[in-house]
Length: 311
Image (cartoon, rainbow, N blue to C red):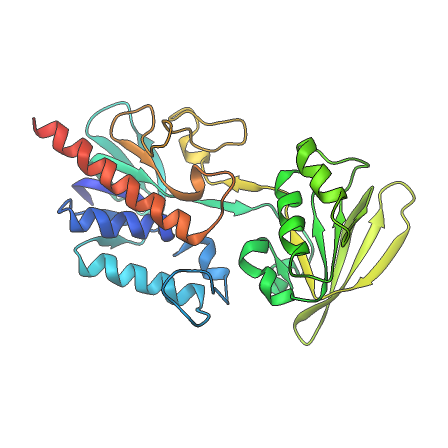
């Protein structure tokens, strides 16, 4: 089916739905193309307690459904399909989908997000949200007073460990090398924090569970192959994220990690009329509220762009 829209939003996480809400309220009749994962990574968050306006813990699926309903109430249309090709060289832009939907658009907002890089443990997916986490800011509070482990050696891992050190009894950082790659000042902060210790030249090879929750991990030394098992209820994996930008290679400028490059303090890309919002352009702050704010900003920038076309 072919159709034309003023605004097309690719992605249905907090950034995408927020962009849809703001675009619809601005009268731009947006179309939100969901992609494979409705709601993005937030749907895998079972206890969200730092999103403003909620005094009780909320489920990620619930807030996703509320965002979707709100977008639809204001006039956004949801298309359950996956984008397979985009043309940003010709105007209007063209978006082709898996189910033979072809949409042209005056403006496009990309909100495809990013996925956490996984360790590849057999039961990693099953234990995500049940002891395994990829966000200390999101989940650290649930491990107050407990001993936890962080995997990684870059800035993100150091930030995670430092945050956890303020609420946990002890934090152990596991890294596969004998040195961190994080900035020196961050390493200094970590080494000067008394309840943080390091396990060098090691990787996590097993995560054991009891009653569906993480109960221990097995760590292997990469040199000696010696294995050690540690009892713990918390494993934080901080080995990077993978932005969902494969579709946009050679279409938009990407940084070395694959994130979409936008103009300073804006969501606008180098192509007029194409915007990026949320985790797909933000390599550092993986927070729902930040993604939602980014989506709103992208929608407002898109509205300003559409108005400029009328002049």
